[in-house]
Image 1: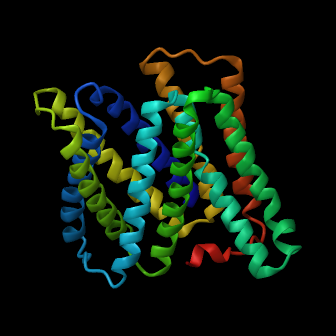
Image 2: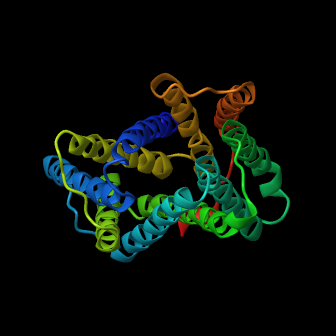
Length: 296
């Protein structure tokens, strides 16, 4: 079920990306972030009230840290998209799964000795690397000499995304329900979006282009809820690897909706992503110890 939650989250996020592509011609990135957060907060206010879930938390600083690292990751990714080729920016952001695997394996090495973690978790770590190789094959990133700063910022977005996902797992272990975690992240997105709008300006809400903001917000909150549940209840490295399927869904949407062409190496990369996800799920049936980094 944890694998299915992540697959569903990837589908929601990829669908959201399609809507953002249409909306971005009418709204800047900070506006989209802010409106997405507002719609998510409104939905979650009704959702939590209907289910009798309180938004009061005993761990406000954990939510604050999750919002901070998540907002930094989102903002740095938008900057990377602005100054780098899109394929390069996306690839650097999707390195978050590699960073998660490295953090978990490093934590296991420190806490459990040198031999057992490598023997037990090494194959799972290799599946994450294989999945990332599939992403690179599909996107085929490029980089010019004058884009080094943008590349470093894009790399930073992947690191902070990894921190954010690990914090999601930590919040679950602290007893926080998924809806509360996503609510406070949406609140952080609203604050960051509004601050950005102060500098970037505000676009007028015109019919019918403003309608794109509604599915963006709803798909974002659905994806966040599914992703949070996947990281909260599943094996972190497996879930991180399955996150690559978002590239597969995005590639299929690009072909069917926007008429994009995918060369042979792209199809091979897609097959590698799918194979690595299946392999990681199968490997998880073995006794893989919980890594201490997930308990922070």
